[in-house]
Image (cartoon, rainbow, N blue to C red; front, side):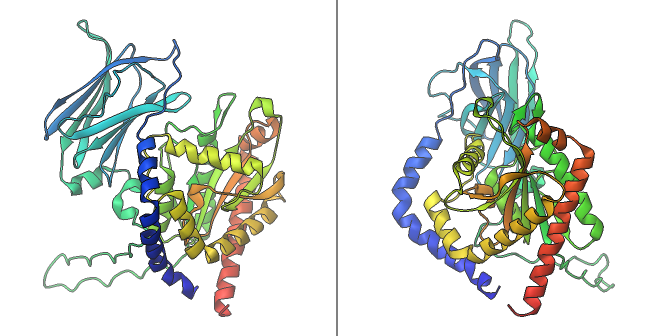
Length: 435
């Protein structure tokens, strides 16, 4: 455990060394990522035919002409300052090169298909700004339906407060950034002594990560979305773990919110998590036959099998094509960080995976090869033991019935909670023996 304190320094050194060699590659990758994915044109999708900016550095408006009204959801992200607009799948028929030049608070914008059924527009801002309006106006007075986004300049403090908790910079420290102690509270009256500070919460922090969310539905099968199934399971797991009072439990999302993969990792590190459990549900395309049962994944540079490699690639790509790719280092640097800082963490991750498999197999069907490994970005925290649990295959009739069953969920949640108890009991016993 003592070696862990040296990881940030080693990681920082690795980044500096690798960056010198990989800068040309990084530049090429960044250039590719600025190209928005092209949506599949289809007559039944709404069409965006024009876009324009108006305003100045204090107030800026973006207008998108549509052929029908659609729902819209907008949120902001920090460092760098951005605003993201999520909408249903749209066929963009906009002039080539639009969005490269900005105006007022908007430096530039890009757009594209996130996944079947969902499109996204990402605005790079010149500074902190709040969303004062994000709506779609109905057709009127000869004007078509219009998506209107209005931004107002604010200071950084107001901007940060407007963000969703999981996206706030203070909850997402950089890898080598030390944890800052909170400022002491000011007494209500100068002649009264300050109340003694509350003792620090020394309970292990468990982060539960329901996969996907927002426009990212994950796997969809017969009208059922993975994001909904895994959120229900994660909320039940949180409630079960909290009952014991032995752990401080936090979740990356508690509603239908999109959280980028790297933000999930940073959130866990910002919480000084002792364990990270990401919850998902798998599927196979109809043409690829049938598979069933739960699987447990740990991080590896090389996938344990072709299925694991394919799943990791799909999960990682789902985030990158969303237009908000927050990866701070290229893959080569991430691999160096893993090699230097995650050896002990991998040992604990694998230990928890084995415990979890032993508990889950007594209450639910497991995949024929239940322990797997692959290069999931969401598992790459260098100092947080992490696993990704595929609860089953929504493409399998029996698994889908289980995933929608309250009794199955309660049994399986209980097995995961028991595995967490066993994991921390073994860690505390090992630490007590000085091993």
